[in-house]
Length: 116
Image (cartoon, rainbow, N blue to C red):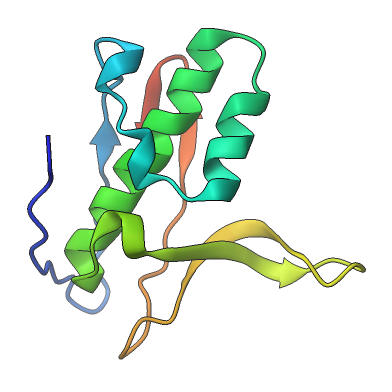
């Protein structure tokens, strides 16, 4: 399933909340929409259910953010909000390189559901 990218808008002072249901099977998670870092993180989970949940949550996040930025999900540049001592980004994810500013967001997933 290829998502359609359309531009969404949030009025000043408003908050959008997205509940992302789990996929029916691991084959339903389009890993090609994740970047190399996200695929590596997903692969690091030992339990298949945890791996699937991480990947599905991040694909869902990318699709939601695509709606606000107008950028295809797989082309979004996500990185940690700060640098560690080795010059690598870590921490809460942020979107980089969005003309006009990126949306602020938070992602949480637990017990088969994800929320953005």
